[in-house]
Length: 361
Image (cartoon, rainbow, N blue to C red; front, side, top):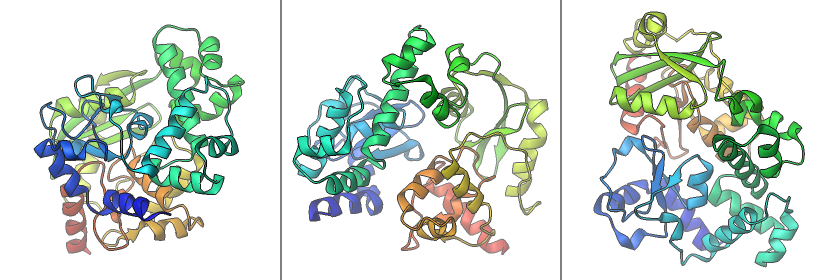
């Protein structure tokens, strides 16, 4: 891996405070080095965007606009972050590969063909692309196809047409991806989530406002935030094809279970879950539930625990995508250097959780 790329990835893993400072100061010098995405709006921007500054806990950083879009964010119409070009040759190479995939009209394009077009070895391309994007070129192409399917269905296209227009050679591949990518079958997705009903309630907790949501099968979402509006908006965005109902009486026992745990009244949270996961995510989440309160594991220790020592970045992504805060204790995973790393619900909350559990140990 080149020195430039090493420096780039080091910045993303260790110096996100610099990125946040650049966002707060609207520093044009950082345009092209990264984009920032805001979970409460679903939008990503360049650092110098003139829009109002978001709260830090709602912000995540991506090396490329394509990475932000793969995570479900859309480009800001005010600052047009997708138009910014970088001077980093490694980043530029990955951007070129993304453009090749995006303009392939859904046709399958091999790693060998991509590497030939950008003039590097397949090994170098795969390693560099995954380091910057957090996924392989084939995974990126698959994500693009799923997103195109979603957009077509939302625009009113019929399911069969949307499947083939998105580049799926058959419906079977999309149905394989449906539980993790759509949260329901393509047919149900196309019907606007008809039949999928999610109830939720919001209450106070030692870590701010707390939302618990559940289907008839079990809890599907546990979220921490600063406002009811923010939490409700994020829930609706995640389960946009389902019917969302506020039902405080129905969810109060589950809400109480989480709050009691945070108040040290119960050692763990025992709730039935109904969460969508790939086989790998499920492995990671089950491993996280084995970490005792008061202890922390590094991402590499979790990877070793599931027998996949080289999947450290994939483990980090699985932690970041955990839909049920606290129930699956992703806050107990930190970096090798003992720094906190990231946390979907805010680093201040992660710090408080770990301090509380250390005292109670």
